[in-house]
Image (cartoon, rainbow, N blue to C red; front, side, top):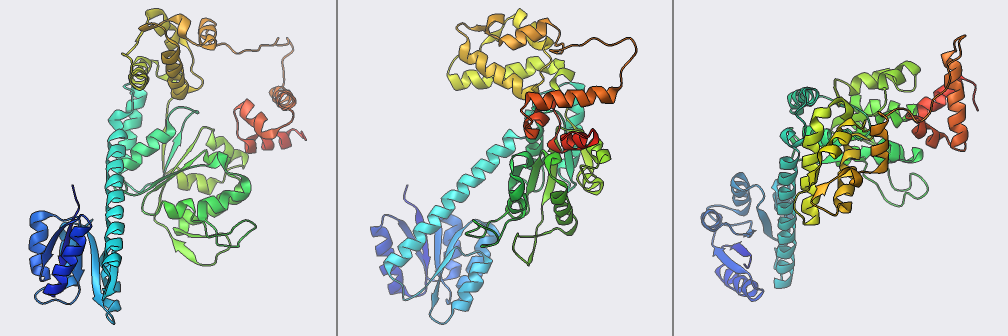
Length: 454
């Protein structure tokens, strides 16, 4: 269907000429001689774009714009101004006009402005649709789990969602911390504004300030243009700082200042930029222990953890495994275009007995693999990954053991030897060793220093 354009001007000959040119372009065109008549046409026929002169009797263009924005805020409005009244056009842009053109204008200039307005309107419709889909997807009831531990999570999260309170989500890797953060955002008053996720563990150390707060052109080698940081992009919305424990102390100081002052200064800049951002942080580390060790600032911890929410490990909510299996089977069978697979009783026993160190993420990956590999309408024990069958059969015991001496041991000596062995196994790569031991790099460095390890 051709877009409808409403052209409002008190010059009859200009209305007729403009209508002819726009109809030649394929548009459906409505015309009105003043703002009052234009508003009546708009309420009846809801055109896609309004083009209006400023100076008209009964109701001028600025008055028409104000009235339209009060009933249809996303209306695409192009203001037409005579030479010398550009100040009025600027006022119209501040109110919400999408563009302005000066008289006398060519039909090509008007067509170009209308095309731009229609393109913006299309993008805004798509954004509204995507926001609506996201809001529906991230409702709390769509997070799978009926166990008592998950019910407590939903209760706290739903209470805090519509507040501006900072939240820290604690839990092992793969428990769904970002999913919960999105649910909190999309159930808050900020749901129509940006949700900006940042993985602190994935940002090179020398780029942390730039990624969070932005930088000015020429502020460092390679800064060829101004860069807008995550906090500015998240203005009026939510920033999700995942793996917050990976942040080094010098960056923690700057983050704390932003949270206290509610403003950022770009790298290489001098001007403070106000930001209105809700912060949700997350970590899979024992952050209270990091505070005690001095690798995470206590004042920043208290600023972030106004409301802590702890996500339980999957092994602590075994009752939810059948529900999660059903949910992921629906998803991946639908993606594969096949009927939903069943899970044999023996396979289900193994899946519920397995300890799931990778939590919900590991379960989802397992289901995706089983759907891809299954050759029948049922997932059997043979379809399960070998590691799951073996660990479930052994009760999930550790893969190593040692003899305890009769005379006793010094725990710190064991820890030191274990760290030495892990460093050697990982070719003395500190980041790889930290991942291997399940701690942050900062924690590893603290303990290496404690034991005098180089």
